[in-house]
Length: 249
Image 1 (tube, one colour):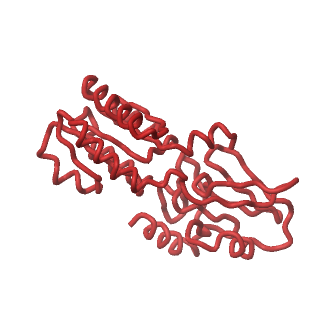
Image 2: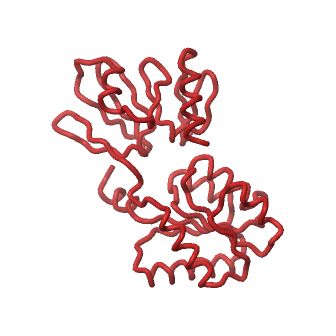
Image 3: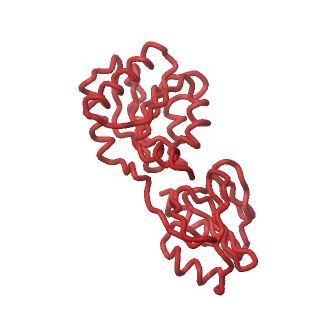
């Protein structure tokens, strides 16, 4: 991962989605005003359609979403359900002109439900609350031995770990593969020494998957964020399912 991307991902990320141009620009202006007053560095992306939001945020992964509810084809609540599946810790703020959706919206555990026209003070107070719950550092990292030295990897960037010919390879979200030198120990011992927490679970004799990277799980395959598939051994399916459900719920 290059230093520019690491810098980008170390700041607050906010996504705004509203199909109404006037409302969309007002929310964006209020967010920029808030960030300026608080002297907070952030990457803000604005979307006019929930489909584009869902597609691009697979990689952008905002800490905070500000969503209109009444939008074409996909409502803000439906979009939030899709986003929540892959980002259980994201903070969701609904902004809408329809009060009738308030009860339904709490199905995705939003931090607030703000009626339009949006008042700056109301949004600013909600952003204060959302930011207080956000870990901008994006979680833990691990330093692994590679040829020529050591390399630090963020755990949430790792999709899965593969063991082959006594070499452990980390398959990253960027497509990069980071490999260790030849090891004298087996895969189980390596995982026990380096990944003893709940972030990874063995889905195959030679593969351990990052539970947070699982998008879909069947009895034979795992579909990861980004669409790549890896196998699930029959003997390990129950353990993977238990880890997956613990993470989601």
